[in-house]
Amino acid sequence: MTYTAVDLFAGCGGMTEGLFEAGFNVIAAVEIDEFAARAYRANNDQRGVHFLKQDIRTVDTAIIAELLHGEQLHLLAGCPPCQGFSTMRRKNKKRSQRDARNRLIWEYVRFVEELRPLTIMLENVPALAEYTEFKKALSHLKRLGYNPKYMIANVADFGVPQRRKRLVMLGSLLGEILPIEGQVEIVTVRDTIGNLEPPEESNDPVHRIFPHHTPAVQRRIELTPHDGGSRADLPDEYTLECHRREGIGFRDVYGRLSWDRVSSTITGGCLNPSKGRFLHPEQDRCISAREASLLQTFPRNYIFPEDIPLAAIALVIGNALPPEFCKRQAEHIEEHLNEVFMSDVFDSEKRSEIMKKIKNKGTSPEIYVRELLCEMGFKYYRLKSPTLPCNPDIIFHGKKKAIFINGCFWHGHTCNRGHLPESNRYFWKKKIETNQKRDSYNYKALAEMGWNYLVIWQCEIKVSKRDELKDNLLRFMQ
Image 1 (cartoon, rainbow, N blue to C red):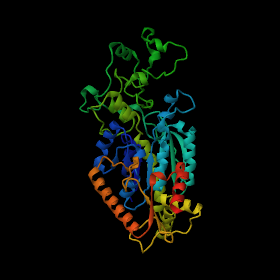
Image 2: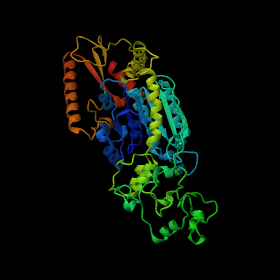
Image 3: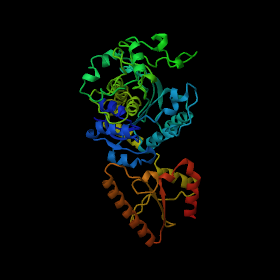
Image 4: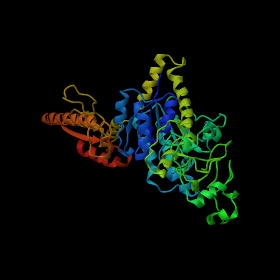
């Protein structure tokens, strides 16, 4: 059985690559960055991934639900932007930076709540664990039935040839699942890039991407001892003034990688030796873009844009999730899913019962509004009526009142969620125009029968707008 997955905040495709390698079928992905999106599409369009290049806050989950054709989503994976939590951005302080992207974790929660996947996986920097909004999100996911658990892992323990700590969170509607511990043999820099030809001899255009320096910087690189040397090993006259001060940190800058160790963390500055230990172990240059991607565990033939600025390709590679790490976690999730779908523990009848219970746990907008109406004293409604020419979501037959709860995307609302995706735009435009025509016909038919109707848009159903929604309902029901 092939399990389905969706990748949010997909970047250039590190998570997606790991999911495919683990045997999942990634049906959709969301990413807004132009350069990362180009890399993602170059590697995944042929795999059939439905790619949404847009602000995730404008994405209607109904698009993904349509791709599932009524089937259950097995895994929702994502890595919300972490810049506000990173050690560098926080300047080694405990408090996270005020960054609007920090709240995007709630978009991940929104997708979980609306799609109800069987399992969830979120990865981020370790500092996320101390963030108040993350703790609130964990509590919310627990109330949804996922019982999320997280751990801080060093990706080097999972076959990734670099020193990099990550927070990984897993959750499931099927029972408890804990992030897997790393137990593999360390993969070194030599194992990963030791057999690569020098860039000037390579036919790989991505391998030929590396920085060129001023004579002074180049001389400093040449004097740095091979195989792990650092700026501390340079003759005194080559020590920069900024490195002479007492207590100066960042000792990895202008340092060489060591052949028989893992590399330093491959960051968004990985093609700039002034940003970290990114010099080749023995060649007098910075590592190339291809070498950086290999240290991130991307396949040798993974496609990256070659016509973008050096700093941009470094960000695309450095901000990616290591595919091998994602693969190991995904394989663990697959084993968890197999316990229900593939093992002899449950017969088909019991398995069907489990799935029905999961689907009945939904917290859809319709349920939210029905519960709100009951709280307000309007308890006697119907969900269907054979005498009406259409199918409102909530019907008060005696009052001749009907409520429609419309998804913003599918019914063409003017809010951000109603924006059309860039891919297959003509197809979606025609489909939504058809829906709107049907809506207009239904509203007119009800009015001609003497009925009043109220349209509630999905974007209006939020905890922050609860009082406003109650007022709206009260006016309609009176």
